Image (cartoon, rainbow over all chains, first blue to last red; front, side, top):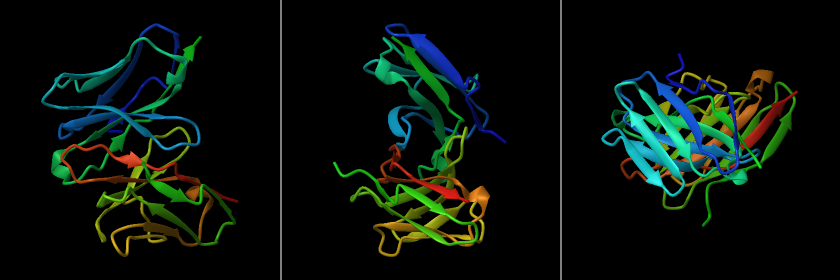
Length: 114
Length: 114
């Protein structure tokens, strides 16, 4: 049972344009959501997060949007740069877990075309 | 910044052999997590320590797997009688027990069982 879903395995975007990565979840207990970026042969690196009490969080070129009613979140990267080419994982946790245990999606490979 | 460190980076072993991996978390972090990632999947939770206490184990962690964190600092993950299905990237992460703090991952140990 995949509780966090990333339905697009890959995405290609022209440099300078906006990249939009999507994520859906099924577990209503999730109340904290994160995006991680992963380069080959490296561990996931934390990018940005959002609490369920918010619907938007921005950090520089990265913005995460949360639609709780639709159980959907998205990551916007603008403008996209070649260094953004990586695999992006959506992850979620629940405060009633008592810890920061994350449930991950299967990832979206983003390729930025120069 | 001495992030999460994992050793070895790569391990090739024959089926039936035992292997042990080590993780050194960020020094001030008291929570430590082990995850496993297979090709095309996101990281999957295996187990979690708070200080030296192992507080949660996934059903993915069969009885051939054992994890320890003897002094609440570094951790080891041992796999006994390895099987080809154990081939994966084993990731360690740590956090500092602040509400909604992200996990910080190491670069992982890639295990290949031949």
